[in-house]
Image (cartoon, rainbow, N blue to C red; front, side, top):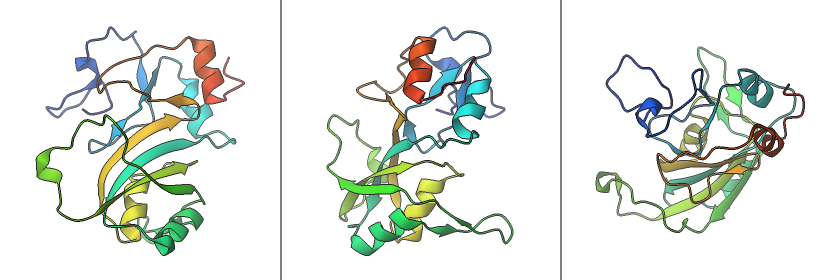
Length: 186
């Protein structure tokens, strides 16, 4: 599914979900079409600016399945900052972030069998306070590991939890802003 309501391409969109979204609903931050997990939707146009363009950084947590066994030197590079190629000659060094090797998440729907490899793999939990284009995928690739699966599990204190793919959970506006740690939202 593409994390938008309108597209010129014949793809599955948010509007195809069995939910009556209010007029003006839009996604806050996107997931690319090879990623899954938590997507925040709102009708409040200030949220994107306050959450992702404001002066206070807000954390995003991802579970990442990579090809191969991740060792200490790669973890160190991921944690301290990776230089990624930018457009033209504008390379970009990621901010330091938290990276841990974690156990496979329980009750996770399986990947398409065509995406399996017969090699060791590692689950990482990566906590960022920035979100450049395909940043997590580029980071793990730069340290020698191909991203097999990318799941956003939290933005600040809003967690995916056991929410099924395609399911929608509504939050009261005050809870939404409290869990996102956004104070001046009115």
